[in-house]
Length: 101
Image 1 (cartoon, rainbow, N blue to C red):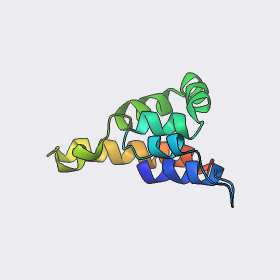
Image 2 (cartoon, one colour):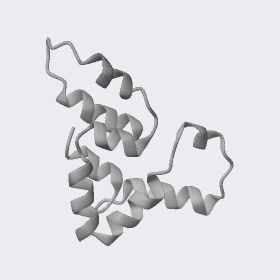
Image 3 (spheres, helix red, strand yellow):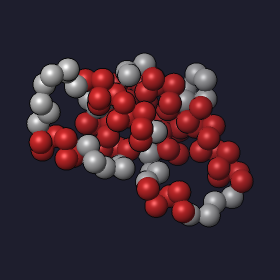
């Protein structure tokens, strides 16, 4: 998810334009909620959340992932739930992000 959101941010970067240093430093985060904002996708996320309860549930599951999550032991059911929230072909978080990169 982090890489997908950073791809959206990179897509907005114009060729031969030196990026704003402050903005670039903010992009060095693993916080998915912050990356959505930096990619200018917060309004789209809120709109989709309002009209698609499955997307809203999927975002609730995915949004709290962070770099330390990869070292935390979780159950098989939790792992499946996270994977399904990311990859759901209609309301998955990755499918949504792919529209913007």
